[in-house]
Length: 306
Image (tube, rainbow, N blue to C red; front, top):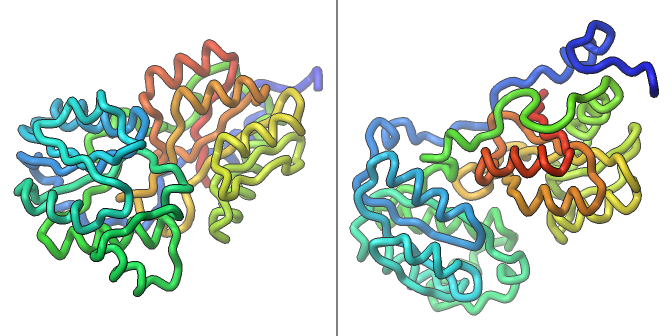
């Protein structure tokens, strides 16, 4: 609408107040004791993408002296593995090998970072240790599988840290992050998308939605965020609003909402105009580059919360 007001310009402030960002309200994981000091040695379980290497950079900058990486064939990039002081190459599903590497490393703290292709969670070639564990799980999804890895690590004396440890500078902050100034109707779509995404995530369907003018165009499911963006963009034509959130009781040790440069590129191709992310919960990989990519694409990046 031609007479829509921009954010902070009087008439649009009612919507802006409704979207006032706040802290990430997730159940805290008791890591305070661990985080009082920087660990000397970090055991990093590394998937694909930029995420693991960003953790290595942050850990080194924080003073971590030694990093052991478990890398996965067909997933972890060689360049990431090369950053480690010690590396163990495994296939997805080799839980026994992973736990053996953890004990051998001598590290007391571990992190998980990076993606594993969803199909690989269902095309596992489990070793004996993994088979025994799988037999006890009523549900076999990313949350239960990674949660069991965390429990098994704890049994061998290795604590799994929050997956945003050492990455505080890359967490999405509150309010406008990049791109054009929003109008009141866009803020309404962000608010609506946030509410819908929170509900679909509560039902464990997906954490990303695409909306436009108060209509839901796409909801993320097993296909992942990028396919949801493409589907929503094709229906919204030009002007869709994407929103990504955390789910209730999300375990931030291995399940962090992430937006990267590739996400921005997919959104640009799909003609998405706005990307809303949950403030203080979402990881931007890496933040300066993601914000620069959004600016270059003419996409508004905005941190929102309840």
